Length: 450
Image (cartoon, rainbow, N blue to C red):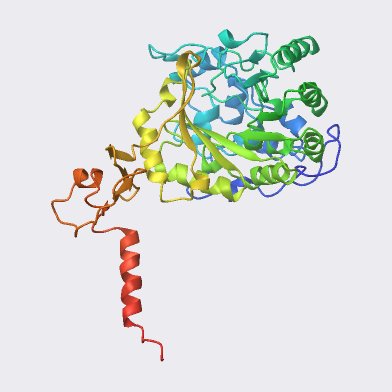
């Protein structure tokens, strides 16, 4: 794999690729029925060249039918492909195990009839990015940071994309004239110290084109941090070449946020791409989107977050799906996200727990949501709840300490809030059982000799 090789981007690798990810994901996924043409496509000796992946993306329904003849075609699917651009890299298509909506990869990248069924609250630009765009291509919502749309091209167009209105509308990088407008605005607004380069996907640009953007941003004295948002490690990991990482190193501090949504995307190729970025000194974060039928189960998110941390990718955000046209079938109730966050706490390390956020409509920005761990408050004590259901009384500064009497069956939240008792603990919990077992083993062990 060319992820960390030294060949030029203009070269095409003839090296035999690693074994297919199907071997990694054979259980519980089943291999989809594939045509000989698809087998030839994904088995091509050039498939580990990212430019070949871009040239050979699946771009139309007729091409899709040739590659997957068992696909059940509907009028709505055709209409969705006509309304919202379609592109899937051969690599990402090879991750599909069941060619229907029960497969998470299929659901995220193949047009579906449900995209044509919009709810009453959906719109093209719910975050009102266009209204917060002082110059073309630059979104300035928060005071200290801005978002640069460097390209509208992606290796694979996600069906849940928040920018479905413009993604794929053109597949060329930002022009030099627009880049000059962007840097002029940044120079005139020194309060902006953090610029996120997004799109589209900046990593689909040539290294020279991306470097021109980074160099222009680095020339602005007030820009301290550059962040890049990309799904390339997920959908086209062979793009992360030694040439790319060497270029990125020249513009540190650079941070990268990627977009894994499901454990099926955590392949050895993806891990190698992330490893190359991290080894180049680039911190990696992950921004998942909570998607119905894809990752809206606590166990799936747990497996995803653990896998990301193993790859040295920090789970950063778990986004509630935006109110974008064409994504109603992906949306989950907010209560589902809170349920997942409740499940994660205490089961995996805090390092692996993302922040659940709603990117508020009307450009309101990201609002973090958490289960309610504050049970009650008083002037002297706050009652807190942990993941086990244990409630503790946290004394506020200046609170008068009281001697807590033995706990009784009548003790309740009021007793905690006034400081009468310091905790109410579930009779049976894993932590309590472990304590009891340890104490019993200590009692049974012989005392050391004097």
